[in-house]
Image 1: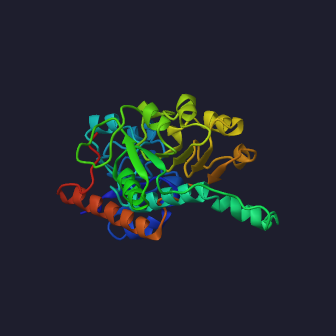
Image 2: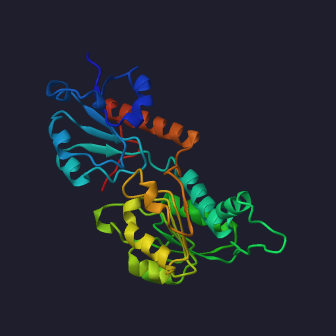
Image 3: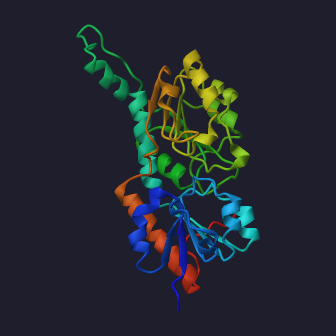
Length: 309
């Protein structure tokens, strides 16, 4: 009996090929397989932040599973997939703890002047006469947008740091110990730090708009570890340059990779290249979840981490 056929979508997933090839017939999309080869594909391995083109799905009539290696799956048209009877899986909460660590690190790096302090010292600007004062983390008002696995992990860490925590999301979660605000604007207005940890889709594109940034204000800090598309990047840069927003610490951009010149004259910002969940440990968990989803799909057992909506 022939092995199931897998199509691997992005070159960044190339390290998976030797592992997958032990069990499956593996095809790399970047090798430009022809129509006949695509017609044999049973499952697609995809990095969920990349848009999955409908024409590619049309070229795979046997496709029955889209297995996102990543936690995010915003590049997949779920309605289209499910209308065709195609199951979609993802990596669950495999990197939630690591992304939360990164969010806290970005907060501290900006609020306690760690990155700028490093530059200040290296430039020879440190003198005995002048010492920069920063703000404490304890008692700071932290607003979290999106209270899934990452948001909860951020809140747990922030609670240990004695921060004041509130959150907002589209659905109430009475089981959580932290208060949910009435809307996003109220959360921004009442926060010193606003962390974006929400799932991205077309309904919330650029929800962190100029009015929300103005509510966060000239003393506020925006931290984004979710998706770049959730923030109106042009409005963010304008607010930082005008001093209407106190600062930003950003790990995700729209598009990616971001153009570095885009940020060259932007003050009060700490930037990292989408590395929040990119730990060796998290990637290992993601690989194990991918293999488990594939084994369950082809074995006819329940999927460990299906995407249902």
